Image (cartoon, rainbow, N blue to C red; front, side):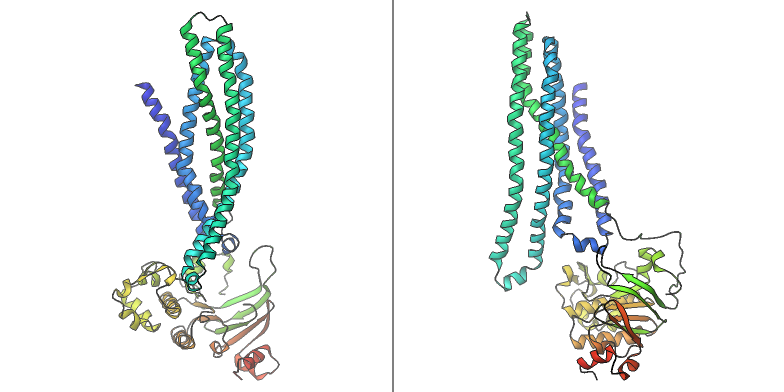
Amino acid sequence: MFAAIFSYGISLIPYIGALHAATVLHQNLLLNILRMSLQFFDTTPVGRILSRFSKDLESVDQALPIIIDEGIYCAFEVLATIVVISISTPIFLAVIIPIAFLYYFAQRFYVATSRQLMRLESVSRSPIYSHFSETVTGVSTIRAYAVQDRFIDESDSKVDKNQVCKYPSLIANRWLAIRLEMVGNLIILFASLFAVLGGQSNPGLVGLSVSYALQVTQTLNWLVRMSSDIETNIVAVERIKEYGETKQEAPWEIDTFKLPKNWPNEGRVTFENFKVRYREGLDLVLKGISFTINGGEKVGIVGRTGADDVDIATLGLHTLRSRLTIIPQDPVLFSGSLRINLDPFEVKKDEDVWKALDLSHLKAFVKTLPAGLNHEISEGGENLSVGQRQLVCLARALLRKTKVLILDEATAAVDLETDDLIQKTIRSEFKDCTVLTIAHRLNTIMDSDKVIVLDKGEVLEFDSPANLLENPYTAFYSMAKDANLV
């Protein structure tokens, strides 16, 4: 009864512990990945991230508890065997220590190699996930150009490379098995030899000692292999913790700094010697620019590179982002209903949503949809045109209606007609807001209050479009001339 309960508990504990560990590791990994800075995603292949969430977490979830359970079982079995042999043949204790050292050195030599081979195999597995993900995303383009065979060959090549890294792990495993078998045979030899030469008179004990010795070889092999596999698979935990401890972006909230609810009340934006680079180690893209945009001004930003008395570096990211609205060049939509994409936090009334759709010139289109606001948006908004996606982003901005609006080449991927619709709505609905427009079409910003011309990361010109066009020697005049606007 006691043995059964003890055996059950010993087997159950590793699984409960692994489940708890996997839950904690996954939660920390997910939270950290979602709050990584953009430079992390620019420099890290997507397959490497997917590998952490798939294969590495699978090792913690499934492989490690089984290995630990079997390792504990083998350890107790080996201990019981040695005790039985030592009781029946006490002189056996004289050789068990040297044999244990042989096992230990074989195991340590194997683990050091196997761990590195496992890392190589893990690294070579990531490109398979990346390639597969990219292939699925661009499958329509691949079929359109009839290059399926090329992508199949590339996938096979990456799998072959992964297998090249996997094969040495199998060879190392066989290397360990041969040496453990040789050392295990020494236990059988000495147990049998000492049983005969030691003058043991009880044939039952001699038979028990030899039979246990015959079994211990396989058990010892499994014990060494399980302990080696534990260290090898712990690499998965190491890889998960690496991303779980990578530097994140700024804090979400900073409780020590309180802002008034109506901030920013003016929408004034001030840049003072502002310098920025895409990531550490790269050259500056903005080299100490300084200018002030008064509240409510419409400012266009052109060139080769694209404040209310509060330093935004001291704010939490959620606080700052909730007070700004950005319409990006590439419209961002998520899988889910149209309403969720317009109002992710579900804080707006339906009439407000319909008004935003009307102002963004999408109401007529949504009315034709059978499900209306509950129309299901596919991943990335693939079942909408590029223009419609951009108008959805405009509707989302209209619902937020913050004091500062940033248009990051919002009309670069749409036709001129959609561009005119977006600009018309922005002029009417954001007339009291500060609007910063980063544009590639000069006619988009010709009616702005001021224009900032950037060149090589520095402010070259900052004035109204009319003043800049009056001087034929300005860079803005030159660009307008090239665009046939003057």
